Length: 324
Image 1 (cartoon, rainbow, N blue to C red):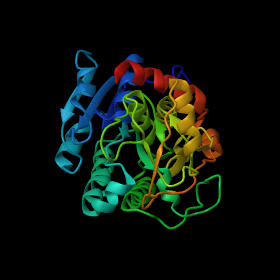
Image 2 (image 1 turned 45 degrees about the vertical axis):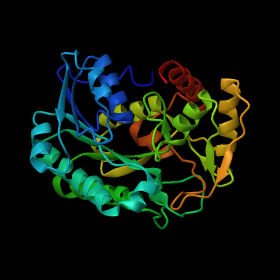
Image 3 (image 1 turned 90 degrees about the horizontal axis):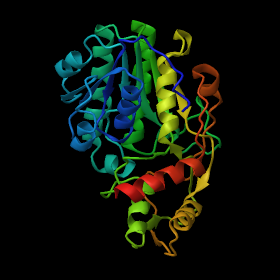
Image 4 (image 1 turned 30 degrees about the horizontal axis):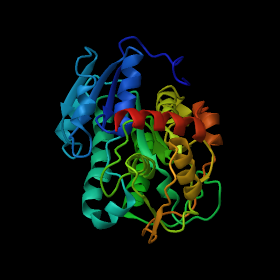
């Protein structure tokens, strides 16, 4: 893996917020496999108990059931922590349009609580999940940090606000913050269920059950699909990044571009299925095209993703075949 040669102090303690979720549980697993101490904070609103149970027998793993909207919980969770990997948030653009007040409470206030707790507990590095949605309606591809457009959803607004707070915490309080703008992450343990499920696990589950998935729009929208191993690498590389690279946000992707309709038929081919999709209405708030310029992350974080889309998709399909 692109992160197995990264070394921290033997007694390093990592706090992973949202550690019972898709990305968070994969971060916990990677760190535990490397021999480090991991503390997971999750309220299990979208995270899953089974992701906690995976590691509960590991002596280096501690689970705190708690909410980032409670500052005292955040303070307790950050005690003696070296590195915070802050993944806790509510995702989904469509759901944020339905629930803007809740997204503000969790994604903005909750993240601010975590930054404040990290500052007061003298955490070395605060790595947090941002999103490609911050680029809004800016039409230019590839997406480059510093060239953002008008925001299209409350979810995108929460991530932009998080980035601005992180800049301030770096400038005012000298807390090393690193924002990772994830581009359409996929891989093992991503939830295929529910109205707001991500497209790859949702399609895979339906196809494995010989059901017809719905593609919103004409299928010609494009995405920079990013395999989970690349995201793990980015988080750990950010933990080792220099102070001079802090207070900024970075695109985390592979740097490719896949059209949704091509992705769909590629999955059909891997699975040996011949099922035509249903085409539904375009979703409000969706960005039409997404493709990342990852040169800044390469230059300042040392991020060099190993998994292209094809390799990641094959691994994801193998996992879902065995686990669905």
